[in-house]
Structure formats: C-alpha cells, structure tokens
Length: 114
Length: 116
Image (cartoon, rainbow over all chains, first blue to last red; front, side, top):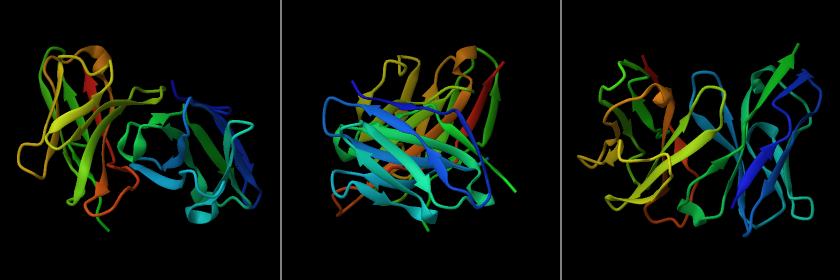
C-alpha cells in the first residue's frame, strides 16, 4: 500500500528565509510524487511532480523538491519565503499510473511572518 | 487558462436528504475524479471515472454515492441520503488531455457540504 507522511503539521518562517516542508512516502512500487498547494478558498494547485526522471524537480514559484529513494523522502524547499507562500501544502503519491488515484498526506500549513 | 469549476461553493442540507454536487471538468480531459476532505483530516480519494464508467472507487464510495456525466460536460456526485459524517469539502478533478500521455490532475475549488 502507498502512503505519505508529512512530518510537520505547521511550519512558520520569516519572509526571506528558507522553507523546508518534509515528506516521507511508502510505496511498494516506483511512485510518482507531487506537491500541491492550497490557498484559502482556492482549489489545489500543482507545485511540482516527480515521475522517475530527474531526482531534483523544479516547480512553480521557486519551489523545488528532491526525490531520495534511500530515505523515501520528497522534501519541498524554497530558498527565500514570500508572504504569498502562506498556504496549505500537500505531499501526494500515486502508483497507479498517470490516471490513478492520488494519496494525500495530512498537509502542512506554512505561515510566513513579515 | 482552462479550469475545473464546481457548484455550489457551499451546500447545506438536512440529514437524509439527497444532494448533487456539480463539476465542469476541463473540456478535453478524459479522466474525472472526486475527492473529499473532512475538516481537519486528509484529502481522500472517492472515485475515478473514465469512458463513462467508474474505473476505481474507494471503500468510502458505498451505495449511497453515485457519479454521472450526464451531458458530456458536467460531472456530478450524488449522495442519496446524507449523513452527518458526509459533511466535508468535496473536490472534483480532471486529467489527461486527449492526445497526450499524461498530465497532472487539475482540481476545482471545492464544494463545502454541511449536513445538519
């Protein structure tokens, strides 16, 4: 069975400082991994995806994530937080091909302080 | 830019009533999904739909739930007799433009269902 664990339910950073949102996955097969972001009253937006190509994945708005098979991790990072990054972030896994169900982590709320 | 839309944004209903949540997926997509998020919990997969039939469903998706694509544009989720525990945010998603091998699932903004 596949699952994801987001290690922090809430992360608070100051504007301009680095962001690290942690995610570990469990999968019996080669996973596809995603990070989605949800701003208040908005739908879920894809930040980036890993689908067995390069292990360092770059996404929108300066975010990136590194797939580490040995650590079963897919942590999300950004060098410098912006106020507009404040949102809920979800780490997601799927192994049922590209049209299969998504399995979500619990979510991490990112707070950005001025 | 094309987007998935959902109506209504908020639905309040009495326990035991039927509700229909509506979604308009991106027009050239082939796969359609419903997910839900109970307050404070994970987003959970409910069902996927392709070629006018259910391709996968979760154990949550019991006989009280049904999905339909009645007219080639709308994708609906019906709950026949709502329970208090059906209160949640329901997200619709679509994926896979025709002519491409893969793409992400695009999500709508959600419908908040409150069962009283």
